[in-house]
Amino acid sequence: MIQNLTDSRFEMVKKHHTETLLKAIKEEKADEPIVPFLKKIIDIPYIFTSSSCCGRILLLSSDITENKKYSFFHKKFHRLISFNEFIEAINNSKENYLWLKVEPFIFHIGCKDYSTAERILQFCRNFGLKKAGIISAKEGKFILEVTNTVFMSTLIKKDNDLLVSEKYLEEVLKLANHKLDQNFKKLKEFENSFLEEFK
Image (cartoon, rainbow, N blue to C red):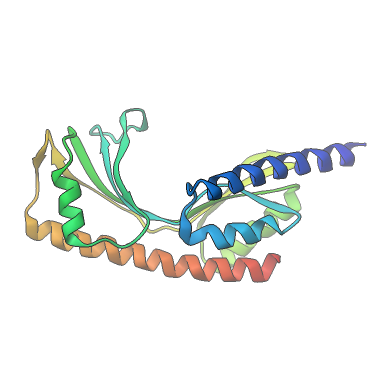
């Protein structure tokens, strides 16, 4: 009886997240670089995905503490960017605090039971992803958060005044693009290895 309830809950949750994902893909709200991978996850009967991101460079409007309550995306790029579009985006901002950030790929992966969750975590550790853990646990619905460790955050404007030189912006963008490029390489390796392990 308990096993039937667990199976039923998992199937219901997987169906819901699959429908949500397919709708996001159709509306072009899912990150294009990871869409092929997410579609393949749908075909694995004992796993599903919820919110995911391939990694990005972003300009974040926020307060001094980067409080999410007061933050919004001024501009975000799920790709490498040129200096001209970087400068244009900065010049078009009028926020009190403007941060340049690089964030890594992140996946939320769901499964039915602890043994499968543990297997996924072990795979992530073996692959070299240190930031992987269970963030929700109940029979029929275990959610894991899996992310790369690439990250950067620096304040570049305050009260609509640029705080740094153009030379600094050139160098920091080179670093941001490099970090995102490394993230994408790791992402591709992760996708291939994950599908090989769990297909």
